Amino acid sequence: MDSTSPPKRTTKQSETRDRVLDLIERLDTGDAIPSERQLSADLGVSRLTVRAALDELVREGQLVRRRGAGTFVSEPKIAQELTMTSFTEDMRRRGMTPASRTLDLRVVQAGARLGRIFHVSPSEPIVVAKRLRLADDETMAIETLHVREALVPGISAEDLEQSFYDLLKSRFGISIVSGIETIEATVTNEDESAELGVPLQSPAFLFERTTRSEDGSVVEFVQSIYRGDRYQLITELAGPENAARVGARLVAVDDGRLR
Ligand code: GLP
Image 1: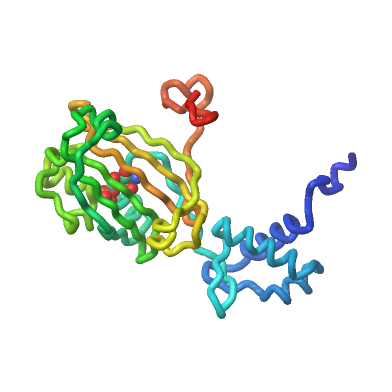
Image 2 (image 1 turned 30 degrees about the horizontal axis):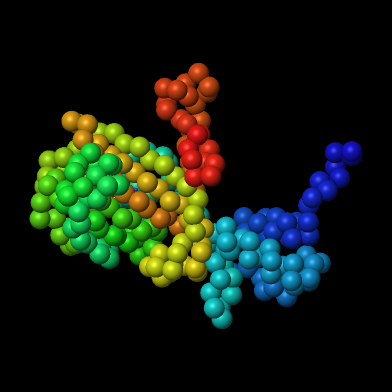
């Protein structure tokens, strides 16, 4: 095959998408892109093809549509490193202003599942707090935090409108020293879509983090839904000889069973 001929599977839509991506690269965040009609004329493809390519770029978070105003270049995604930092610290490091809104806080009995996670009896009281995380007033994630009440007596919804990790340290004298995080692909459900202000079934990352304090006991179990259009995950790859040390693992899920 002639190396300059395009791969067979290149479709009109993906070609259009790539050409709009080139255009996006030359524009600034917040700039409007030309209308569908204009793009269709400029690129020599049908409006239907342009619309499908733009839909794809909107889903990927490269473009954002504003009703009646047009289609604009999105903010660059947040490159989230896989480290144990707090949301607050992460956003501050990027020069953004973090915020947290407590949507719900209740104390429940651990039950079997949380009992196993925390290594406590099913009757142990657990604080469950649902928080909306924002950066520069834009929604980023929804986090459901679980922590033993005995560890954070008297914690209130208002307390959690600031950094939980800072609070743990300053008020309760607890430092987090290790943790495990799993990440899965998901889509937002009805509640999450409304809370994050994104369309139903938007792509998202589901993070589950379990952290421990110095004495090895579990401090928090957190399930977080991060916006797929605002985040990308970034990690440095260790060579095969270092993989075990770093603890990198690829886990394939098959029929719900972990391999
Ligand atoms: C991240 C983690 C959560 C953790 C939170 C603490 O968002 N995914 O598991 O609870 O950071 O952040 P903060 O100290 O800002 O509340």
